[in-house]
Image (cartoon, rainbow, N blue to C red):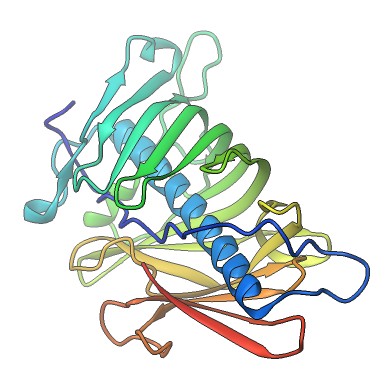
Length: 316
């Protein structure tokens, strides 16, 4: 498979942020946070969320590509599978394993571990992924990704259950403009670079569409947790705060065609339940305004413990 090319490009490494401050835990009384500690804490929280979201999206896209079995789909800008071997020795029972063993194609990160893909199997027949309603299970086995620029790592264990709501595969969009819809449910154990272990859940819908030969993915939260609608993720952050991430405006990014692939063009995520609710807006320029071309990054806004509105702007 090493010569096969994928419809999915390598995700641009999204923000691996620096030092982590262990203070500022939520309490029943007023939160006492210094402005510097507050900004660092919010930066780390926003960065962790973005990294986890993007890494799991990349892995789901790797799985999609492996199941599609497409040799070439993207033309001159395409990327092959780099340092991923595919074990299909058990495909008769619907099991395929992706083994990660080195750098990604643009040498921005290194990956190790494996992800198994289990298709529906009734003991005699395997249901194809393109069948409407088909459900696959991705199992992360010590999948570790390390940013090679900042030498920060994240290790994932756990499962993603993905249902093909619409039927078809993403590559079909090149000849058929009907949207492809996947519903995702996840239970993951995360190990951050500082050794912190946390459990996160996810419930989101990924919708793929095409316009002017560009394929885009849109992510939306599709459940309610702790009274928050449009929830996409929930869990506990590094300092022990429980949170729920809602997506009031879907996060949209291109995955094929044109430029600026895998850099969110628009969308809003709200991290509820924290000491200071954090709103992350994607697709901005270096001044925090909505970008008209390829965006610089995202901005995060919150009200600190002194009641002052704060903002940080970070590049992708």
